[in-house]
Amino acid sequence: MNRLSEPAFKPLPARKVFRKRRSRSPWREALFSLLNIAVGSGVLVALLQLPARIDSLLVVSKVISTLIKAISRIGEGILLLAAGLAQTFAILLVVSLAIAALLLLANGVFRILRLGMPGLGSVLGVPLELARMLWAFVQIRRPDRHEP
Image (tube, rainbow, N blue to C red):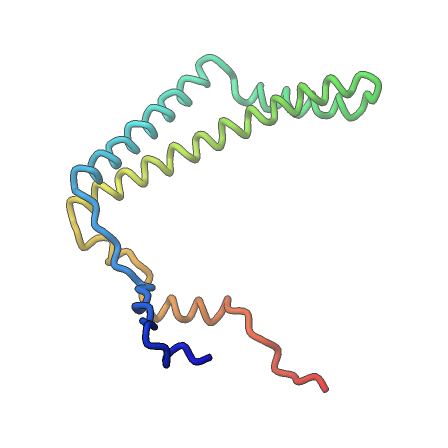
């Protein structure tokens, strides 16, 4: 049952595990970076318009008071709890949009810098010794003791 002895057997070519990443065109990188900057800036401008229309501290205090009222009044609390949770969800959505916009801005700026200075990506990478030290620290090892 040895397949190597069969006349029609051809071994499979060696798999390429670590393939070199294809480089993207500079135009595509520039387009993605400008798109990230535009979307991030647009979301931040939209978020900056919110305080003019809504007093954010008043909204947060209303959310907290609505949640407290909902917990204290069990009878009518279900409806108030739903309103408070909807307001809390809205606040969390605004915060997550702000974080996403800042990440998009940082990503776009980094891509623009990397496009202008090609060696920047490798300079900002983690040094090999530091990566090995961190890996040795977080690696899960088998226990040393032997069970009978």
